[in-house]
Image (cartoon, rainbow, N blue to C red):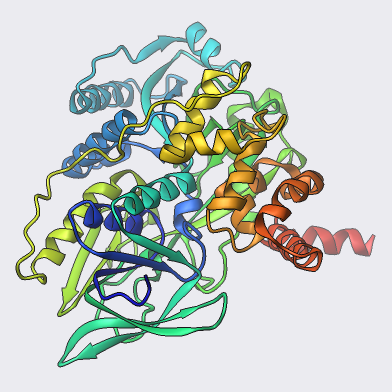
Amino acid sequence: MMDADWDLLVIGGGITGAGILLEAARRGLRALLVEQRDFAWGTSSRSSKLVHGGLRYLAEGRLRLTRESVREREALLRDAPGLVEPQGFAFADYGASRRKRRSFLAGLAIYDLMAGRRAPHWVSGEEFQMLAPNVARAGLVGGIRYLDAKTDDARLVLRVLDEARSHGAAARNYVAVESLQRSGGRVTGALLRDARNGRAQLVSARVVVNATGAWACGIAGQGGAPRLRPLRGSHLVLPAWRLPLAQAVSLMHPADGRPVFAFPWEGVTLVGTTDVDHGEGLALEAKVTRAEVDYLMAALRAQFPQLDLQDGDVLATYAGVRPVLAGGTGGAPSKETREHIVWDEPGLVAVTGGKLTTFRAIALDTLAHVARQLPGWRADLAPQPVFARHGLPQGPRGVSTTVLARLGGRHGRHAQALVDAARDGELETIPGTLTPWAELRWAARAEAVHRLDDLLLRRTRLGIQQRGGGAALLPRIRAICQPELCWSDARWETEQASYLALWQAHYGMPIDHARATACMTR
């Protein structure tokens, strides 16, 4: 397939590239996507996992972005059950400002109107304590609740890519673009290199799309691009028993008033997020800093004082870099726009910015630019259902409908094959997660796993759900996956060592050098 001439070559295997590949393929274009690392390696596996309508954008007066986000959230809730799920949010009110409360409730009424809903939002202090029993009670007068949604961001990318393949598209991970090729001033393709075997190959395409997000300015041979302001969002993961929540809890940070949240996700509790300039460069994986850990822990201790949460309660950390357009004012990171931008030159269309929720709208906007460069191609760019409908897979007696619905949402047309491939006990969930062991087997067999971190950080999320990145589970994971991957013992040992080193450096708690030095000098 790499030898074919393509209508469209999409560079970038995150949610934006995946969405473009799907929308192009379902409209008849011969489309290939390449990703230099793993699918969803960058921002699209390190987001806040929220599919939200952008309540904050409404407060900032960005009605168009909010309306678009609400529409896309509702489409995903409708089209991706088991993968995109409703998530209730609760916000404690300590009586600081009635005017702010009225403004917040008025905004929620508009928010609901955009989604075609009407629901009460105010609850009493007693009711709020039932929703979030561990919140600080001193001064609590009530609370505000509203509805958004959540997902497994990496699995969403993989599901979109597979939907694109069902329409004839191709997608390859670990294939990098070395340079763009030109003829007569027009981009005509790209020189690709496969990281697995080192093979280089020239691929022709009528149009090339750069959908590399925060990395959008890094492709050799590309012309001018808008100025980006890469912003890092960092998160903590705690055991659900240590920070038990039925609802997501939103709060304003006691130091600077920024919104922070904690919510139940995939059997753990997710806490986020920071919003700081990422100055470490984009060649290496982002990681949480000590200052960001302290910032998030301070928010948790203020909102849940009786839990006495400590560093040792944190299972894992992760950080992602957002492709945010620079406003040029040098203002607060949270004030920068989350809208996307598309620009082009002959044979090349590039897109960056935007957010997880609006990937379909971004894809359709990008294809409108592509259409101008494809004479004779006419396609209806009205939104279509994100995914084809598939019935629930049928499992053996005793497997819950909840587990089967989850597998259906994450694996679509392959869910039944995954269930059929499961061996005894593999449809049981891994402790502390909602993940059946069978997902490991299927990922190793059929989901382009090239490295162990592909398996544990993106095909499944065990690397951020388990203490030590799931080191204690590795013997059983090896027994299931090594035969499927056809890795030798030496290969497995090398991959395991690399994965554990990667996890310690980028997903564990950051080392506090000042504290470590103090301990050494005692």
